[in-house]
Image 1 (cartoon, helix red, strand yellow):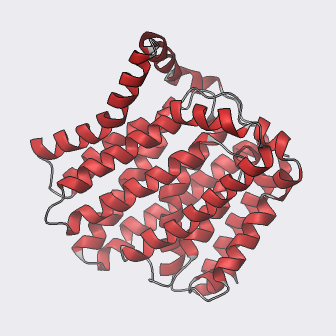
Image 2: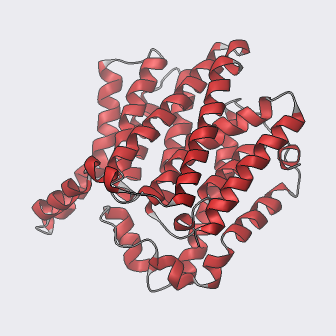
Length: 330
């Protein structure tokens, strides 16, 4: 039923999305102070700045976080439709993104990945458009810039600069100029941040703190409980079936520009999986990184399935496991 409803955008579709979002965030709105305390202390510079302001106003900060999430929900729809991955009037991508971003209780609050994902979505949108641009260097620079800003909210995201490099290879646009443009975009925010810390005589201290954050071996020490493990296995299973069908079936009948965009989306997913090595003790939040590529891939998967009852059945299984992960872990 839900797949059928969200295959097209009607006047009431945004209202349904907002209602679903409020339902999934309801327990946080009832106790905003407790919800805000879930995040803990973060060392990413921009998110640390946001936290400094937000802890004194938990309800306002929670509402602002929810609004940011809904902006991303509608932006995901735009990315999928504007790049011809789904029907231009489909809202499936936004629905799946909303469900994935609310699939674990730790995500129902203001957290760094929520802010980081906004800039990752901007980076993805710009990267998907590089193939159609005659003068693509500004987009390459801007993509590097978006990745850098995303990293200032959540440091492990900096690995996504490799997503940009590999995307240029997919588009056959890799050159010394494009690599330099992407690196300049990545360096720009850190250049000004470095000057700021230098003027405050904090440069050495902040570099030391930031270098301690990335410790891949700590990921192996994280032991999820049974329900969280079930949620992780669910994400893995649906990732497998979505990208397998896209690669083996969907790509075969599409023009070259769509094939390139699906390949770029697959690259984003691979980098998202690799980025788990840098999640340290934030595995419970890091799942939100997968929501960016997986929401679009699953929306294409559901939209392209010819047997509508099968699409509804598979979506129902996904929804069931998300609700179990979301509410059993409370």
